[in-house]
Length: 452
Ligand code: IFM
Image 1 (cartoon, rainbow, N blue to C red):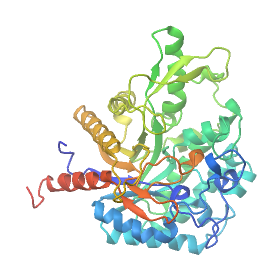
Image 2 (image 1 turned 90 degrees about the horizontal axis):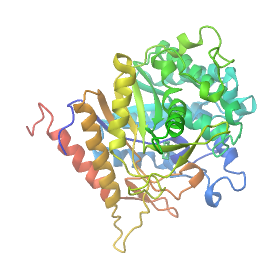
Image 3 (image 1 turned 60 degrees about the vertical axis):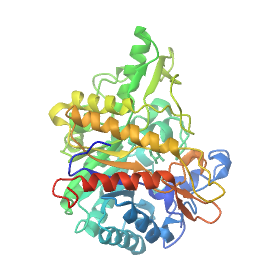
C-alpha cells in the first residue's frame, strides 16, 4: 500500500447500542432501540442489544485489542440513555464514569478518543415526547452535549454530533424499519430539520464547554441512474438530494437543496424558524463520511418517493448483498470536493467495511480474505481522492468486533475480530493482522519515524 499523509489517523469505529450490552445496568434508561427490538418481527431472529458484545464489561479487553492494532484513534458513541435516562436533567454519574474510564484507558494506550454523541439510541422518554419530530429534542440534545463536553473536553478534542441522520429519518421515521418504527413517509421530513438543528445547537454547546473540534458524520452514496433515460436521471437526482445533500447543504452552504421532488416549494419546510439556518451552518472542523456502496435508481412515477432502488449488476457482493465498489468512494469524495469547494472541511472516513459470513476453522483461526480485499480496495480509493486534492485526514474501519447489526441482529459480521455469540469471546480474524501490519508499515514510513 502506498503511503498516506503523515498525520493520517488510523482507526476503527463502533456504536454504543451495537456493542455495550448492560442495557439496564448502572442506571441506564431505555432507548428507542430497547423498545423496538421487543416488537415481534422487527429484528431477525428476535435478537436484541441487551448483551451485544458485552463491551460494557469487556471494554479493557477491547482497548487492549486496539492498542495491539496500533490505532491512532477510536470512534465510539456515547449512549445518551446512560447519561440522561429520563432524557433530561441531571446526569447519571455511573454513565459519565464509564466514558471517563474508557477515555483514560484509550489515552493511556496512545489512542485518541473520538466520541459520537448520537448513534441512534434516543432515550425512550424523549421519543414519547415527540422524538425527532419535536423541536424540543434539538434543545435536549444540546443540553446532553454540554454535559458530555463539560466532563470530557479536558481530554477529548474531536467530537461528532450525529451519526447518519439520513438513516434516522429514512429508516426510523419514514419507512419504519429502524427504531422508533414510524412509517410516515414524507411526513418524516421535520426530523431532518430538527436533527440538523440539534447538530447546530450541540455545536454551540460543545464549544462553549471547551470542545476543540466539532464534526457531523453522514452516510453518502453516489446515486447512479439505472439508465440514460431522463426519468431515471431525474430519479437519481432526487435520491441524491435526500441521501447526499439534505444533511450537508444546510451545514456547509447554509441552505437546503431544492426539495421540489418531494413537494416542498421555495418557502421550504414549514418547521424552519428564523435563525435556524444560521445555527445549523456554524463552521465545523471536519466532515465524517461513511461509505459502503453506490445506489442505483430508476424512476417510480406516482409515488411520494419518486425512485426505486435496483441491484447493481456485475460486482461482488458482501454478505449483506451490498456491491463492492471501491471506485464509488473516490467518486464520492470527488463529488463532495466539487460540490462544496472551499467550504468542504477536512474529511474523515468515519465508517467503511463489509459484512462477511465468517466462521472459525477447526484450528480456531478465522480467515476473511474478502474483507482484506475490500479494505485494501477502499483504502486505495481514498489515496486516489487524496491525490486528486481531497483533504482526507483519517480512516475508521467499521468495526472492531462483530456486533449487533440493527434489524439484521447478529447475522452480519463486520468485525476485524470474531465474536463467539455463546461466550462473547473475541478471536482476531486474518483482516485484523492485515490492518495491524498496514498501520505499522504506514507509521514506520512517516517522515521522522525511526524506520526511515
Ligand atoms: O452498523 C452500521 C452502523 O451502525 C451505521 N453505518 C452502517 C453500519 C453497517 O450497516
